[in-house]
Image 1 (cartoon, rainbow, N blue to C red):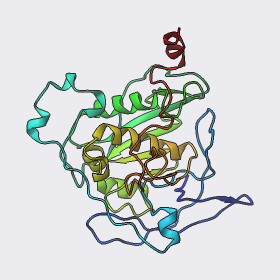
Image 2 (image 1 turned 60 degrees about the horizontal axis):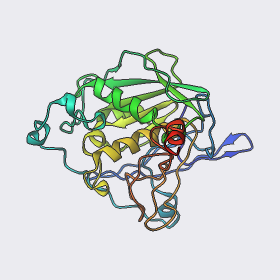
Image 3 (image 1 turned 45 degrees about the vertical axis):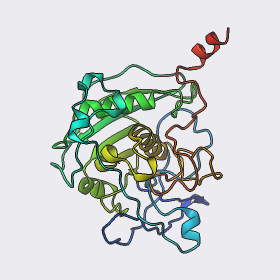
Length: 290
């Protein structure tokens, strides 16, 4: 499988676009070509485009069309040691655990987080495995728990009945969600130039940059939980066949497939695919309505 960077299918062939990925504050190198590959996993793709496995953060279509390159965003600082020590880790919400310092590199070897979860949601099953690079600070289990919580939520790609999700630890998972240090992300995302900054999707792998996981980006204004939801849903969205979209209008909720790491484009930050869905599921919602 290859990388797809805002590509479209033309008469069964792949069209290739050249893009440039901004990365603060290092000099930018040229991005490489990437080829089209097909979606993976079961379920309903809904409004999925033919684009997939695109980097989470290439230049947006509107900027590229004007010959402009968006300015490099600045990451929000990680939480201080004092803030981390305020409460026991088990009392911290799953999506806010393992807030660590940024790193440049780790051991380079990926390890699958062992364990199998429940089937979450209804509809055709999509399985996912979670891998974490060895040597990263924090707990691999915290990342796995966060991924499982996000993908199992009715506001995620399951869309309250269109698809069910289950975490597995086998080699045959439909989707693989990886957490890796910037240097390793650059290698795993090649030929895309991720510049040690952005995340990407490559084939059926959603590859999350550890520095973005612990620090988010400035536009999210220290809302690390929303950013973590966003980056998981965005990259997994690419593995399911969804391409990039733009902000629909000033002040509106950003679509999850918008490149929010680069810019909110006037939209409000959002991590969910279907933010209006009941987080508890439709059955509970119907019960609450009497």
